[in-house]
Length: 565
Ligand code: ADP
Ligand code: MG
Image (tube, rainbow, N blue to C red; front, side, top):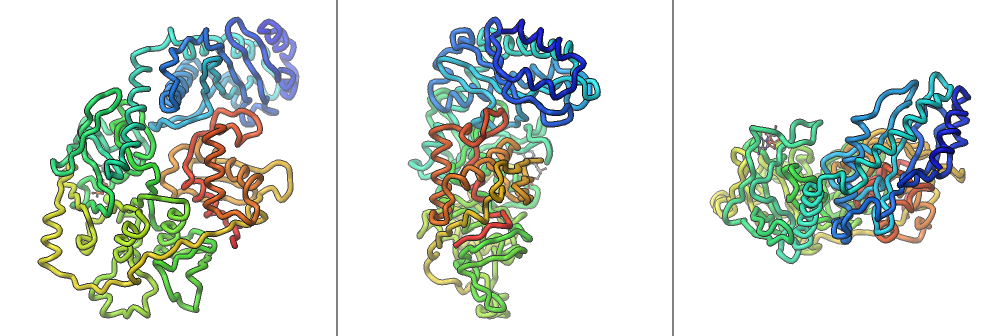
């Protein structure tokens, strides 16, 4: 019990740091259980893993707050934020290295399913890390008592008990997330791929601060012709702009808010906290951002719908390179997204390869088709919808060629959208461009790939796999660094960590040299959906967050050791 832990810590005072291992185990406190899962071996090492379990009747959350998956994720998110805030406010340094740290997980504007807090009728469980205190490399027993026997009970009391929390705020948090999920569910039957409510605040404070831009932000207002309504379960009637299926073009002058709109749509696959400004901006869950990414590794991808007869007879039905060009990388990014079952492609001219996007009449006249391997996206974007039911939202301020193929054209002017579809179509008729369509009548097939297990297994038959996530976009997997900086829909380091763990899980369980990548992705995602993220790690951790099959595929596809059949 608690007293035993106190005595034990006092006895450890002054001893070598490794003796902290003796406290691993579980302890009954007056109204919760403290579990020490793993202690660190050194004050400078990654901090120790702890858990607290509070009985349901003591935490006393009304079941309506966690009875549906949507609500439970929102409540768990809320509690994670409370724990984080409060732990920070009372935390202090208590010696060398991480001494004194009580941390849960870094958390941004998105509401994601996480492993930090779990809740059901029986327990609220919270996981966190503790930097066990040391002076030099000696145990500071008194400091440890203060942390474990005083601070932790205080944090638990303030952040995991319903009566100490703001009931209205919790209710609102849960309801907003539920409404967003609800709208997202309705999109397909309403013939939409994205929704941006009137009043939404899309711009962010800065490129490194994802909070809403205060003061000067212009609130979003839908043009009448694109306006749709949703009657949400909690907030009632919500009006805003619906982006229809098909090909949508976002045009407008430079600096008029095109990329900001697209970015909000990209992140609309996730929910956001109330007052984020994008909390009801929702996007089809299978929407994938596509960009050029020169230098990336590509393994055995059939990019022939876009690229043919490369110099030196290089195959494009089974294309590999260690150093892709802008256009081949963008082609591979599209094919890989389709392989993982993407339903919407999101493209911004700012990060697209020009020669992949357009090839105008004059260039067609100068460079004959048999000297140009690329079939530009403009000739494939309609087929993608017609043949594969894949919609595209494309930011393109620089070329009117796309007027011809667009179903909807939205112009951003002074940060406000206008429906200019009819105008654009008239202009397309007035100034005919008489390009010759390229690349045939059909989009073509996606050739399945089968990843070979020995090419992915990072352990080379060792027991432990070296996994390390330095940042959202940088992962160490075995002996390799995987660069995820161009995978723009990974928003949280906890997602990257979960993806790394999922790669190991996939290798051990499903990658057998027979299953296709698409099958493997579906199996892993189903396991996570039904059994939770905990199946990815050997012991309970606080810092995993949910990801989509697209981002898992992106990590596997960027592995330089990968080989496929
Ligand atoms: P574009 O892609 O059209 O060139 P951006 O989307 O990059 O334009 O936006 C240009 C600048 O305007 C950015 O600094 C962005 O934060 C800001 N911005 C975008 N939308 C709004 C808005 N609704 N209100 C205020 N500022 C905005
Ligand atoms: Mg832009």
